[in-house]
Amino acid sequence: MWKWMDTSIRTRLTFLVAVFAVMIALVGFAGITTGRATNDDLRAVYLEDAKGLDLLAKDTINLLWARIHLTNFDSVSSPEELKKLLADAHTMVNSANDAWAQFMKLPIPEADRAQLQAADAARTKFVKTALEPAIAALERSDLTTYRELNTNLVPKLFVDYDTALGPLVGARFKYGQQRFDHSQSRYAMSIWISGGLLAAALVLSVVARGVLGRTVVRPLERAIQMFERMASGDLATRMEGQTTAGRRDETARLMHAVSSMQTSLQQIIGQVRTGSDSIASATKQIAAGNADLSQRTEQQASSLEETASSMEELTSIVKQNADNARQASTLAVSASDIAVKGGEVVGRVVDTMAGINESSRKIADIIGVIEGIAFQTNILALNAAVEAARAGEQGRGFAVVAGEVRSLAQRSATAAKEIKELIGDSVGRVQNGSTLVAEAGTVIDEVVVAVRRVTDIMGEISAASEEQSSGIEQVNQAVTQMDQVTQQNAALVEQAAAAAESLEEQAEALRSAVAVFRVEHA
Image (tube, rainbow, N blue to C red; front, side):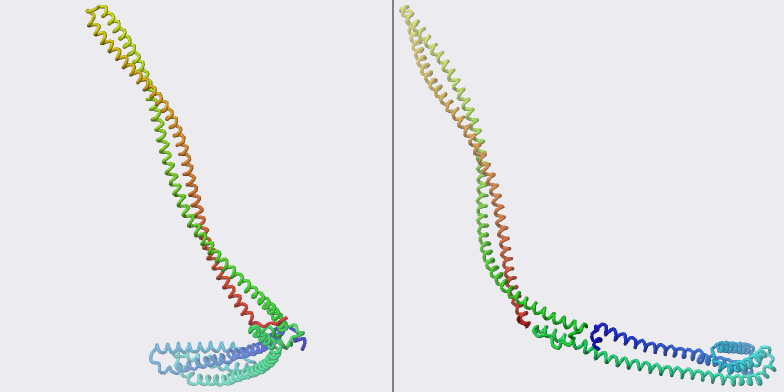
């Protein structure tokens, strides 16, 4: 018995299933054997008895109908009716012959062979010596022979044939009854065998239920109770009634696995409790840090907003400076062009003053010539006056003219002298003006150079202002992006704070859930 308990549940179940399978096979074999024998009996009853009786009935009925057709000859009123009557009689005889031929082919016990031979002889005599000759006489219209046969021989021989069939039919019925009794006895035996096997199977099933209930069901029930305690949170209660100690079947391994699982669950729940406490503490710190970080991020976002606003103002100012520098560069270019034109005008003025100076020199030379002419005229007038004085009274008029000419020459000399002085003064002033104009031209050239330098510097300032404006615009965009990123970071920090708070709630819920379990304390 102990070795039976030491085997695995699979082996036990396999053994029980094999036993039940053998019993079922025996019951099935008995049923199949009985059924096959019964089928053979029924087949024999059908082929040898029922079918034989049916063929005998067909033979007898067809022969009887043939006799009736012959007897109805006196009621025939036309050749067509006679012809039809004879044809029907032949058909009946042929059908009877076919049925009898099939009956003769059926198997028959040797004990019934004599009755069969007697019946066959009586039938052959009736058909060959009475029925067929009577039909042939009608066909020949030999009414005398027909009436003699139909009146005497046909009834007598048919009675003889019917008398011979009686023992044969009785023997067939008796043989069928014997087969039926034999089949009934086999059926009763199969019932007893099947009943015995079923009773044995029932007893075995009761015994198997008791053994399986004690070795499988009870340990499973204890395991279920243990699982229910674990499900309710009781991990401290150990499994009681270790009836599987020393056994090596599946239930023993199951109980050992449940005990190991209980120990593992106690360790896991203890670790989860410790971890949940640590998680709760860490989530609180994370939540506090996220709140502080959220506040700092909001401050940083506010500072970035102010910086972005200042950068926008600075960008506007730099753009305005760039516009002013661009306008100043344009004005400087215009001033440079005007200065160049002024230099050109001053150059032309210098050339004009040089021409005037040259003309003044020429006028001075002409005035010198006029002074020479006046001087010579004065000398000539003086000589004329001297000559007039010498001439006396005749030369008085000439002397007057000479005096006038001399006076005119003196006035011309005086005027020429004054003009010369004025021309000399004008030439000096023109020379001074030419010098000043030359100096002005030099200054204008220097102004043009300076204006060009100013124009270049203003262009560089304008380009630098544009680059500065572009750089400040990029800085402004970067600050704007930083502001957006900071806003997003602030939103993420808020989400992280919310997640930390949710994690803290979940950690608290985990602690509450783990607190349901009772474990052994070390």
